[in-house]
Image (cartoon, rainbow, N blue to C red; front, side, top):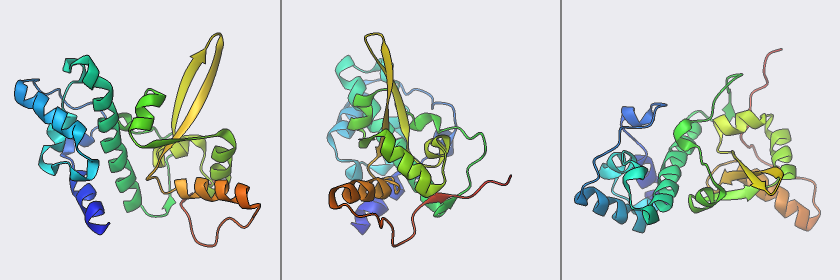
Length: 202
């Protein structure tokens, strides 16, 4: 397990250019690049070659064969989200989000299917409210400091939203305890510390 975590942290030490808000420049899609993408899509994330992660992230999804685009977007989202989680852990348990923070652009999803393929889990409004109450985080904070994703979908004339958190996000432990408590009818949720947002000055 420790080896897997070490591998992920090494893999997520991306070049500075890839940590910028703007998307990285697209790599030329030659036969070698296409082969590299196919290899990345087949391998489990913890076994990806760290030296080639930057090259993979630089690929323009529009240049890929159509059948590879969604798997590519899911893998790319997973990598950026894992980096987001790793960076968050470095900031400690108590987070201090800016008042008008913005979620990392490259860690944003755009469809429920891609999010689920990237390791996200769907949560529901009552679970989100419980997490917000327990962490003192706003919904925007959860998007900036953690991995909350909101997907807006339409069904007929109705518009509704779906909520997702990555399975490796530390606040998924809060969701898990809420779900377990619902099964066991317990109300004592926490005996140890959990991630939270610092109170804002008024």
